[in-house]
Figure 1 (tube, protein in one colour):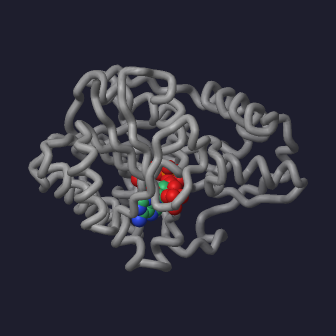
Figure 2 (cartoon, rainbow, N blue to C red):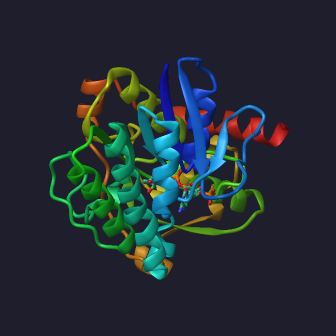
Length: 303
Ligand SMILES: NC(=O)c1ccc[n+]([C@@H]2O[C@H](COP(=O)([O-])OP(=O)(O)OC[C@H]3O[C@@H](n4cnc5c(N)ncnc54)[C@H](OP(=O)(O)O)[C@@H]3O)[C@@H](O)[C@H]2O)c1
């Protein structure tokens, strides 16, 4: 039985992985995150606290648990927070990755690491894996440095770059879709950029992609996102339609009018050919992703 160590299990992707692996008996999984407690039911999952910025804690947990695969879903993923708290962002998104790769090398484990479309400058999307990177904000810089740490470590690895994730999780920070839903439900007006264009991706697509990477033993750098490329404004309209909310509350704007702390790469999106070919990745349409989100929201509000 393969043994997996997941880092960042309290996050959007981490929680989804826990639910997905919870449905299979093929893997022994230890979930870990920065926080002392796991947001999901501790009775159902093995969980221990692990701060990936603590080199010796990482080394001792990895040496004692001896996973075959370490999945790193831990990060400071807030783009504006990374811009404002640079040291903290570097510690988690770069030094934390170093600690995991060093520990992985000691026991011969594979690392599956998550990265982002924000390693690109957004001038020429959609991007392929071999396109030139050029991050324009600090989050993107830390995520690119994290990729380079994995590449330089001399260990078996898969890096999955993903884009604008949406989904639900217990006590997870808002993602774009849940922010839109919450505001429109409250009857509040929101401004959404028509010039930020990418492929919004349902979190379940990423969790399944990671599972397929493991099942197929896929290795290398992969672009993973859902099928439709659209602006934040159009995505918000799609969300309003899917959740039967008032689209007139959505104001079309441009990035310059949003006063975001970090500049955004405007036009990204990925070609996912390599992921489809190498591990059978199957992107969802935006409508299918929002339908899945609808089922999740229904589940969360009923329970
Ligand atoms: N969300 C997106 O739209 C998006 C887009 C592109 C790429 N990505 C990438 O996808 C990955 C997963 O993102 P996500 O949205 O699931 O992130 P998230 O919801 O922000 O979760 C990240 C988790 O990392 C944990 N963490 C933070 N610092 C840590 C530390 N020092 N040690 C251990 N764990 C720590 C946090 O744990 P606690 O809650 O326990 O403190 C948090 O739950 C990240 O690599 C991110 O860069 C995300």
